[in-house]
Length: 243
Image (tube, rainbow, N blue to C red; front, side):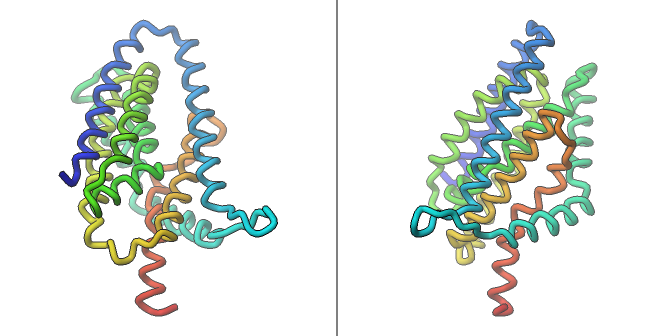
């Protein structure tokens, strides 16, 4: 069943988020702080690892050679401008506050948990590649693996940030479900290189989320989300106009 992977993924996040909320009520603040720092470091390193994997290539002699540098810069700049114009992060925060008013009044960390979890679960390479595999071949194994990881991390996130983490399942349904549904239409243009470039940009955004969690620098990761799809748009334009 095409789309099952995303449904299972959303369900795992809800289950993990709800479970973690019960832990949150009995967890002292100093433990919450150290957990967030630990997760922030882990997220930062995952992002760095994925970025290096996509940016560097081992050539003859065991030397490293850079690749896709210009498309990376181009994607981040153009994607950031588009996201800033659309104010994606502002809309995510507004959605989080709306859910908070409706379902969790008095929870000061609801919107933060919703936005942080939504971004982490959406921008990873597994979200992109898994959704494409599900839509193109009906193979949801990557999304099933992602469901386990997301479900476990949702417990930890919710233990610190509360029930807002569980509500991040909604953006996951829309984002991954949308990619899965569109996969069949864009299949002819989805080369391995394009997927690698999209995953690389996604890893950079994961790194930025880690920086936010560690309070190193506030980066509007939500407004950078369109950058993930710029490599695909660039590939289409260069092939249509034979640039």
